[in-house]
Amino acid sequence: MIRRLLSQLAALGAIAAALIVLPATVAQAATCAAPWSSSAVYTGGGTASYEGRNYTAKWWTQNERPGTSDVWADQGACTGGGGGEQPNPSGFVVTEAQFNQMFPNRNPFYTYSGLTAALSSYPGFANTGSDEVKKREAAAFLANVSHETGGLVYIKETNEANYPHYCDWGQPFGCPAGQAAYYGRGPIQLSWNYNYKAAGDALGIDLLNNPYLVEQDASVAWRTGLWYWNTQTGAGSITPHNAIVNGHGFGETIRAINGGLECNGGNPGQVQSRINKFTEFTQILGTTTGSNLSC
Image 1 (spheres, one colour):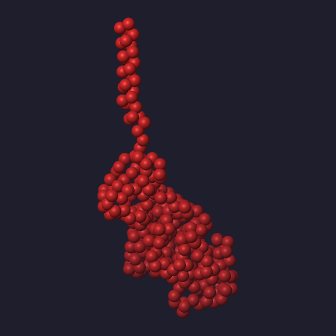
Image 2: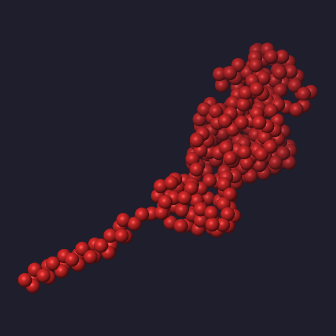
Image 3: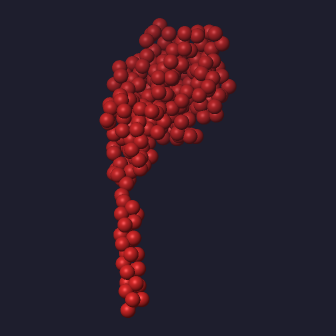
């Protein structure tokens, strides 16, 4: 009888012990707050989640990633409701909000949708390497674009006196659209009949006979910019795309785009202007500039 009573008491003790530890085994992590966004502004007490953890802002912040800055207080693990940066429906590393922040005075012609539509022509652009490098390449491209177009204000070259100079009659295909039809257009100011021919052939668009498409269709304009960025070396020896993804530095993108006039001391003010814009854009995207910024 005593033995059986002791056995019952032992069983009750085991159940009680299980009841005591049970809450710790089933406790649920907090629900994740809205995902952190690099373009959003957070003030003291503001919350965000990132990579499965909740954070609270201690003071005003923008573009400071949770977990990498003292401005954020880690509130512990969370589940559900996201946890990474707000996904971008376009798949591009630059959100539309960030694009608008970069170009607050842009010409309405240069649409974000036109840019994202053009990405399919060069799928490796801003999509090669680590997230840091992907964002760095996007920042480098858009910084040079900003410099070339006055912040995406100009669609075409403003000095019309130059227009007749961009026809090289030494090319076998000539200038079927006219002597003065191949002036600078688009985000990297595509110019010369042979460049319109090469870009059009690469993109499957007859730009030699109709160069005006570059100033009429935003997606075509962006595609020509990406064509140059991904395939042309200009005064340099590597394309701007390879300069960034292979670690040669932003300076080599300047050399490829306008190195003949700006690099090697040709125009240090213009080079610095490009560097300043690149630095600004990398901060907006939450990435780093890397080394070798100048040419």
